[in-house]
Image (cartoon, rainbow, N blue to C red):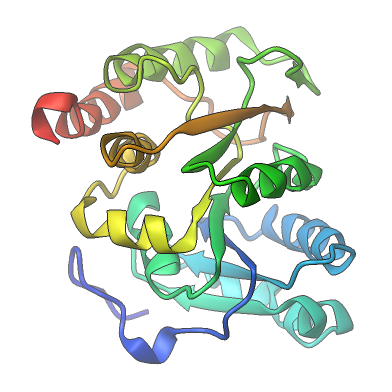
Length: 253
């Protein structure tokens, strides 16, 4: 896959047909979990009354297209719309930005490739977006939320390491990394012009700019299953995450 320069703008040729809702799925080394996530998402969206599409953005070189061919050619893939983009190995924030900037959807969001938060949460998310909120997020830390599988102590520690610095930027939002984050399309595409965080702090950066622009962020209680794979490490991941968060702190807005 050809490398893409940092903060490059996607070409107009990557734009897709307009739908009411488009879900961006950034994927890096997700060949094992991605097929199940795509299948569950397509099945769910095919039963909804709103037009929709799923856009997988391959942030790396792990040949994500190989596992998506059968879905794109299936009846579900044709009914919902399944698209694949490549943005080079530039980080989750870059993958999300690449997907959103090429979208013309009325509402657009992004979710994880590991299916940790059930896709059914998009029903209340869409209701809140249509009501005019600036951003709607899934959260494990609001009344009604319940983890589907209890998180291990090491994962809880890693999450707390990130939430501490994040709370300095978004003190009223307890959880910024739980599966789904969704926005009105025109608003988030405008906001993305000022967002340049490519790593794990990109979620906070987007939400911080929504708040700065005078819009609200509301949370929907979520179920949660710990993903398989490497456990977040405060020592390994903390400094990088904190550095990204400092770039979106209020003084740097």
